[in-house]
Image 1 (cartoon, rainbow, N blue to C red):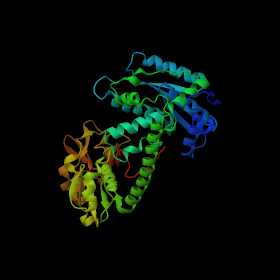
Image 2: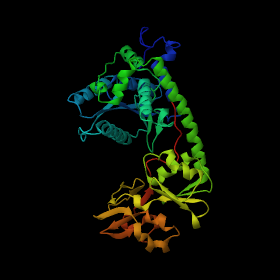
Image 3: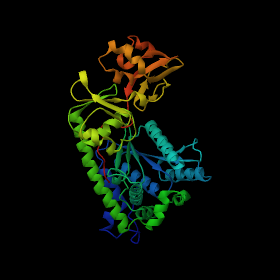
Image 4: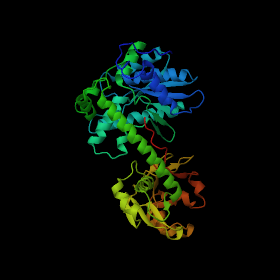
Length: 437
């Protein structure tokens, strides 16, 4: 596939620099170059709604992978929330396949209208996309968010009182456990993408829900009165996001260095922090990981401990002197805050922190939950303090303690299916720094 430049009168074609410098292909290629190296013959996936933005993304990505002997998988998600959604998704798949792309429709059947529909639909879409990527062996999932989307995100976060981290906007890439989310169009005005599609002779669908006045993003879009995404105000918002993103990236790197030098994170789910004051951002990340929480607590909640560490509880995490474990501080999950037991099946996640892996099914009725008060009778099996033991995961059946795999209790734990419990919080203690667009 060979992409052509926009027509001379295309929106944005001559506003900044040369056509080559402002063309979506150049912007897309520059964004992808910032993420190199990729594997030989890269395999990418693109989330395609059928709208102009995602259709342009698919066209650009298909050209990019073709030039690198790679492949692109286009996933079209049908939420089933509008009468025409299935037909539009099928039409989009047909259009992509007509251009030689591998396209597949993903149908969501469990969504029901009601409170929080937008958030539930987004979460379900990402789950379906992640599962499709895992099934296809894809490491890179491309999303079609463009410059106006970034500007609107900035305004939404300002209105919600977001802190400095949130004002970095959306990242160029977000690294996950097995999938990286890539947004290579975050600096591209939507008018350029539509002009590009027109030049390619590629049609798209218009989703009426994008104009829904009930949605905050739609209201902000209408109030901005910048259909093309090329106004000075939009560019100012993108520049602000970029500046905040660079600061956030530098701060992430600094926090990672602090954590590496000051913290010992243990597979039993607790951490040892060396003595002395520490950056509050580092404490917030510690609390998030130990609590198994998706987000770190507000800085103001941990600032006092960071400046002058002393015993306290914050965000479901206890801080206490490390005692016989060494100098400094022990940070451990608060027993009173742990989640109730869950059925002990392979892949089960308990308390947002521990994931069960078992090659063989466990007997019916086996539950995964906190060791709790039973910790007292296991003190002779370990040097760990009761505060750590009581919040550790254990296997129970009929309210009888069956096993504590992390303590190798009992010795015949293999009889419980050879199971393992992995400390697996939603976010790593320290991940890749924020990547600004």
